[in-house]
Length: 165
Ligand SMILES: [Zn+2]
Image (cartoon, rainbow, N blue to C red; front, side, top):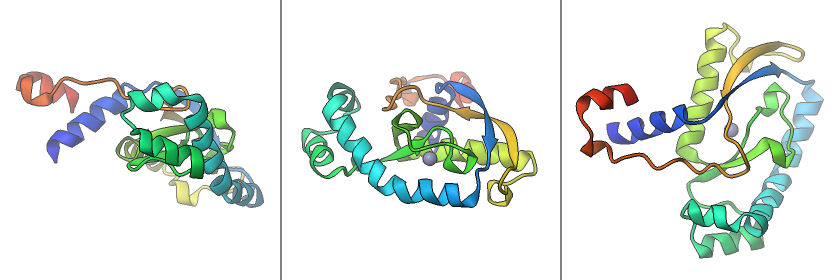
């Protein structure tokens, strides 16, 4: 799926990067935030269905899926709710720290963060309470990430294709 890969990587480059101080909170605090998130994720989906209808439509979410979001708090197929500053790095469940994003772009953002953390010789899994480091996190603006439309890669020359990689 080379074509899909190109699309995702190009998309990732279009997301603004924010330098964030990643600080691991105490374990009890992390557990509290994780426990609350199940409920908050649903509240967030309902909030989006009620207040960001046009953005959901622009993203191509069907009216049926929007109805499900509003009624049950379940997100649309292929999308997930992401913490802009990760919980493990001190991010909260505040709506301002949450964004609805496609699963494909989401996994690329996490891959990028892991790459930087591994590069700093402090893999996320080994960071303990109080540990901190600065990382550049691709941070979508707003509560719904709508990727800009890219040209079909089949129609562009190989020279440009290499730049997108
Ligand atoms: Zn995430």
